[in-house]
Image (cartoon, rainbow, N blue to C red; front, side):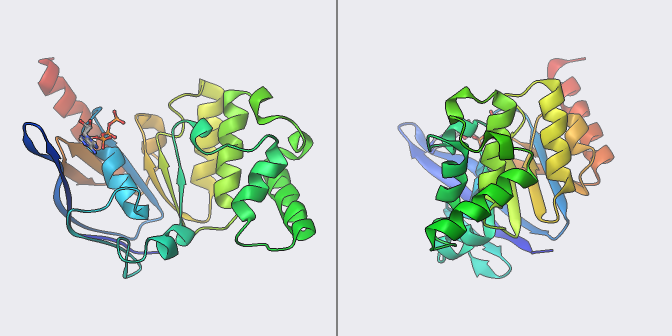
Length: 235
Ligand SMILES: Nc1ncnc2c1ncn2[C@@H]1O[C@H](COP(=O)(O)OP(=O)(O)OP(=O)(O)O)[C@@H](O)[C@H]1O
């Protein structure tokens, strides 16, 4: 598996009321296949996840993917690290399904006919082959997220970072997308509020107020998170 290194990596942003720490300097070496990230709204999970592919840049320290500095080599790292957003509308942009996957492949497969075939193969792999010429606007939420993931995986990244990929989905689609992500050969960093999904991860980070408050096995991480919530609400 790739090694994702947080080397004192943190994010501080200026605000009218002074600097705000979004993520305190964090040091981690992530080599597991399934890495979960859980925590309350606004705790810093997305920030941490986005730092892996350079969508957010560390203001202190560094993030490295297999030793390559994300900030210094963003384009190179992005070719290895795919990113799945909560809302597939953020990444499904072309009129039809096949065109959307072709867009992902534009830099990888130069010849149009070859690109079309690769895109169709990718759609087939995700059970979307029959929808190749369908308008992306007529897809259900689950199909659209599946298409977004197909687009990300089309270029065969080594790492897939998924930021709450099931938040907008119903139970059946949550299971479907969860099974798909957990079934991938790639390393997956999964930010989620779904404790069922996170229980299947090899290592789980619990983020609270811009810090990793727990880092360990899934069951223990979930217990830590639940305990912290219960303490906060006075249960
Ligand atoms: N560029 C920025 N400027 C100011 N504040 C920011 C910026 N980016 C993030 N924040 C704030 O930092 C905090 C952490 O944001 P982040 O999106 O990482 O949280 P999260 O744990 O993913 O939350 P959620 O579960 O709601 O998606 C939030 O309070 C957010 O509003």
